[in-house]
Every structure is written in structure tokens, then in C-alpha cells.
Length: 151
Image 1 (cartoon, rainbow, N blue to C red):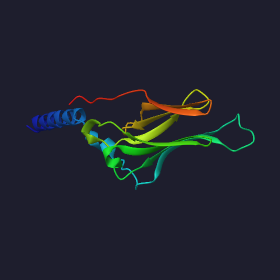
Image 2: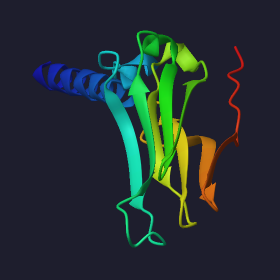
Image 3: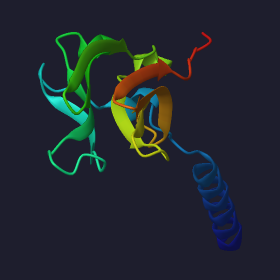
Image 4: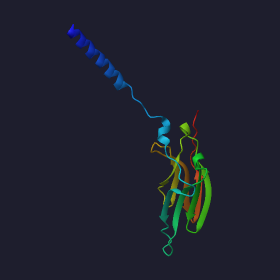
């Protein structure tokens, strides 16, 4: 009788341990969106490169993203500079899965005065939205991609 109890106990423990290893608790998808925008006026992302062709002055190609009072809704201020040519505008980041708050990012481009404005949804991946370039003293920003979340 003791042997049967031992075998039964071992069988029960084996079955329970097998069930526990198969069940994995994943964090909710919203756990990746814990980033919160800072107070309005705070620079969140920036890129700058000195204008090499102008040896006399210290001029720069600059792009910066700053927070607004509406940053929780995805609205941010953008400042674009090429030397003395300075432009300001606003962008709205797309709605994302589980209402994640997207973090604006800037990534350098391959051309001399080029960068991309995009966002990180909390997964560490850069999602491109806009291309910013400066050619012959003219700075341009154009939308390159759209994102649509199917509900």
C-alpha cells in the first residue's frame, strides 16, 4: 500500500508540474506603454548636424520635438532649422493598440541633412512618420507613412 501511495503522489506531482510549465502569464499589452509625456515645453527628441558648407558661421540643421499640453493625445510641437531658416509646426501621432502613449523619436537619415521623425510604441521599434530634409537652404518635412489600427 505504501508503494501505491508513493507512485500516486509522484504521478500527481508530475502532472501538476507539467501543467505549470505550460502556462505562462504574459503582461497585458498596455504594460509596454508606460511612457508618459513630460510637462509641456520639454524637448523629447532632437537631432542636429553642423552645416559643413558654412565655414564662417556656426549654423546647424536641427530638428526637435517638444511636448504640449495635449501630448497624451499624441500632439507634439516640431521645430525645424537650417541655419537662420526656422519653422515650427505640430504633428499628431496615430492612435495605437490599447491606447498606448507613443514616444516621439528622431532617427538620422543617410543624406547629409536628413532625418526621420517617428515614434516608439514601447516595443523598441522605430516607426517612421515624416522625413525632414534640407537642400540648398530649404528645409522640408513630408509625411512618409501612415498607420491604421484595425479594431
